[in-house]
Every structure is written in structure tokens, then in C-alpha cells.
Length: 310
Image (cartoon, rainbow, N blue to C red; front, side, top):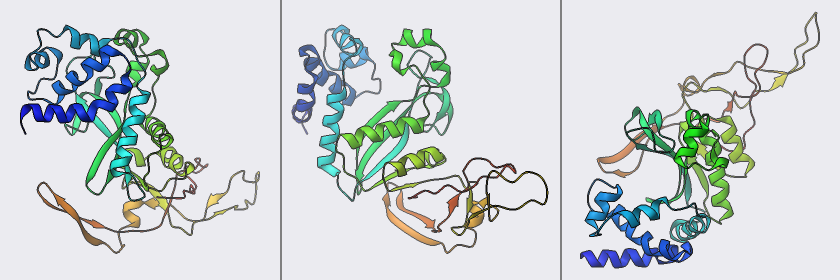
């Protein structure tokens, strides 16, 4: 496609979003900034982008990026509407995941030494909670929320210097951010049949319960050491010969690690699609279990939680 061709197509796609910006200067410079981000060249800082775009300087782009806080809610709603029109429906899925941005220095908001999925190890980076609406092999991003580590939330001076709004200067778990983004996506009318997440989110009982409380069908990863019970587990009240009566019931069986429960399961090899390096194939097995994650009992064990989906 000719250089002008892709620019015209991009400007056409951006038009409803630009209109929603309202402010004249923002409507003028938003498409220019997006062109710079999507254009050639690895460096996406303002000066190199301005040079590649043929601008006399980068001051106007800098003002666009650093201007006063503005309400992005109309843009987010519009994005979800567009995404839903493309891939939304009962067969679509909403994928919750992390997006990590490796960073040098310490001044970018939320940058810290933490696990970076892009590098597969702990590194200096920003981490964002991302939501993607997908159908088949077509994914469309619909949500992105910056994770603020405790080291940032505990340093109001650093937050103020970086421009973090006061109401955001608190450490929230990624799972809480994800549930908040899910609420926003639902309120905007996105349609999907299931929520998916890896074990980074599935390990949280509160996150899974939050999905169930919202009436959502979900499938999430858990660590192999997650303790579980069989579906037949119950709670009973053993009678002690002496001492005070129990205040809490106890499980009728001992919990075991999920990998132990699956050891004798019937595994099946499944090829679900082709990847960039060939077919994506793995072994799958399915068992119904109850997670051992209730309030800790006197013996250190946990009763089962009743979860409607999983």
C-alpha cells in the first residue's frame, strides 16, 4: 500500500475517536501522534517520531502528550463498541492478562523491578492489566490499566512528580484492577461468552469468586500445587470427648495438590490451531474438584469454596 493510502485508511478509522476528543488541538494532533507510533523506526520517543513525520520540532507533540488531564471515558466506550461490532457475541471470549513494558530509569509511572512477561524474568518495567475481546483467532484490545506497585503508592512525592492523580495513588492488586476493567467493559455493552485468564489471576480465590458473583462463565489457570478436594467433600462436626465444642466444621477428606488429583486422569492430546512455528498441541484432562481455599481452620487446612464456574 502506498504511503498516503495507509494514512488515509488510518485517518478514516480514527475519525470517530478524534471527534470524541472534543478539543480542537487534540483532534488535530492525535492522528499525527498515532501515525508516529505506527510508523517505521524502533524509537517511539517524541523527537525521533517528529523527525520521521517531517515536523519542524517536537514541541507540539510534546504538548499534546503532556497537556492537562482529560476524560478518556468516551474514547474507551467507543473502542468497546467498535470491538463488539467486530468480534462480540456469545462465542467471543474476554481474555485477562498482563502486558509488560521494559523500561530504563525510574521516572515513568509505575516502573519498578518486577516480573516482565516480555522478557520472561524480573526486570525494570511497567506492568499493565489488559483485557482483550476475541473471537476465533481475531483479538481486539478493549482495556488497559496500569499497575502501581507498593513502592510507588507509598511515595506520594514521587507520584505527584510523575503526575499520578491522587485517587490513583494506592496499591491495588492486579486482580482488583482486572475486575474493575471487566465491570467497565460489561457496562459498555460488550458481549462475550466466557472469561479466560492464566494462573497469575486464577491463583486468586477472590478473583474467581468475583467472576462468579458477576454471573460470568470463566476458565482460569491455577498452580499445580493448588490444594483441592474431590466433588464429594463435605463438612462435618466431629465431637470431642473433652473440651469446648467446635466452632467450625472440618472437611470430610484431606486435600491434595491439583497435579496429584490429575495423576491418574484420562489425558487427551489436542491440536487446537496452527501457530507461527507449527501446530499448537498439548495434553488435556478434565476433573471436577473443589478448591481448598476457605477460611483457615485450626489444623491449618482450608474448607472448600463453592464456585459456580471454573
